[in-house]
Length: 287
Image (cartoon, rainbow, N blue to C red; front, side, top):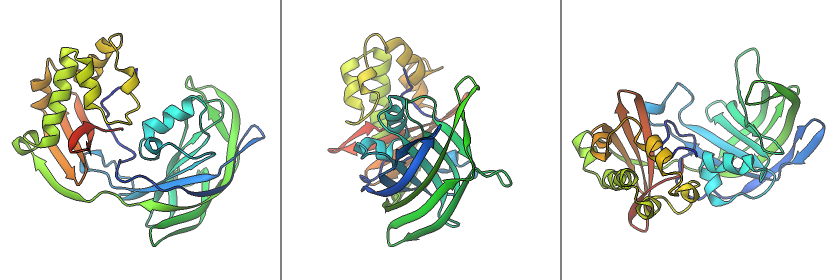
C-alpha cells in the first residue's frame, strides 16, 4: 500500500486543467505510441520543499489519451494510471524563465518503472525548442538527442526509448497564497483541525471516518480497508504514538483559497500534507 502522507509535492491541486494538444510520439524499441493530449500547470514550491529547482516552474504532461481530472494535478494518480498501462506519455518540469526542461519522467507501454531523467550540463538527454509562454498558454517542441536506456527497478537495462513531440496547451496558474500560519496559529487553523480528525480516525481504526477525510478523487481511497489498517497506521503516524503527538510537530500551514499545505517537522524529518476545500469541508488532498 502506498502512503497517505508525503514528503514532497510535484503537482498542486488548484483548478481543473484544460486539455491541450500534443503531436509526435514516444518510441520504445521501435514501437511508436502517438501523443495526442497535453496539460500544463504553474507550480510554486513552499520553502520547506525547495531544493533549488526553478520556482515557479511549469509542469507539462503529454499523453496518448485524455486524462481523468485527478491525474492532471496528482503525480501519484498519473503514476497509478501508468503502472497499469492505462496511459503512455511524459511529465516534464520546465523553467519558465529559460524555457528549458530541467527534469521529467517517461511513462512507457506495459506499465513498469517510470523513467526519471534530469538535465545535467554536458550530458543532456532532451532538447527543447520553440518554447513559448504567453497569454496563459504554453507551447514547445521536445525531443531526445539519442535513444535513452530503459532502467528497471533493480537497475538492469532492458531496451531503450526516445521521443519527439510538440505541445500547445492552456496553463493553470498556481494558487495564490493567502496566509502563512506558524506554530499555535497553524495548529488552530481549520485545515489543521481536519488533519487532526483524520489522524484520530487512523489511530482509532475508524475506516468510515478515514474515507470521509479523503478528497473525493483520492487515489488511495480504495485501499482504506481493515486488512490495510496496520500498515496505514504505520505510514500515517510513523513514530508518533497518537494524533496529539503528531499535531505537536505541525510547524506551518500555507493557506490558499481552496487549498492548504501543512508542514510537519519532527525528529525524523519533514512531511507535507496537502488539503483541499470540498463543499466547505477540508479534506486530505491528492499528492
